[in-house]
Image (tube, rainbow, N blue to C red; front, side, top):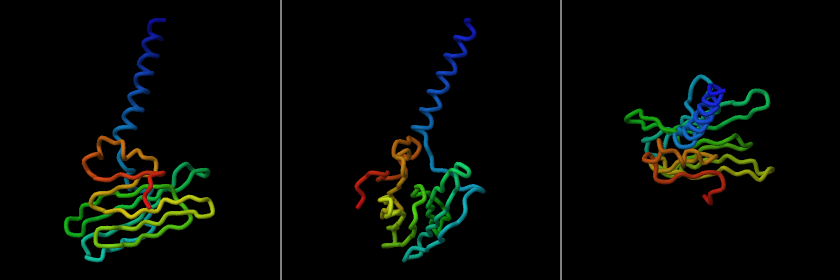
Length: 152
């Protein structure tokens, strides 16, 4: 009986630890073998950055597709993820200025819009808001946006 109690306490503690870790130590999904280049690389007007959009399927036959946008500094080759969202019907990338990337990801028929303009030096967007809570990402951006934020 005592062993069962200890096991249940350890199990509960492990679950809480895992939930806390996933909530506060989120990092964007890695672009591994599952990622497929969807759009790009699209060079910024001054040639300093390249933006590439990837899609990653998840959930098997009943799942969906996640878009990940990665920006690379041309000189240093350093890459960082600036956008992560579920797939919508209409998707495109466009540079508005040397540092501002316009992302269109929408399904107007379903009233779903994940469009945003991001300064690639200081802004990120992650649909669920997990990146905005992440202690790992806190010092790496100035503005963090998620679904439901007024970003117009």
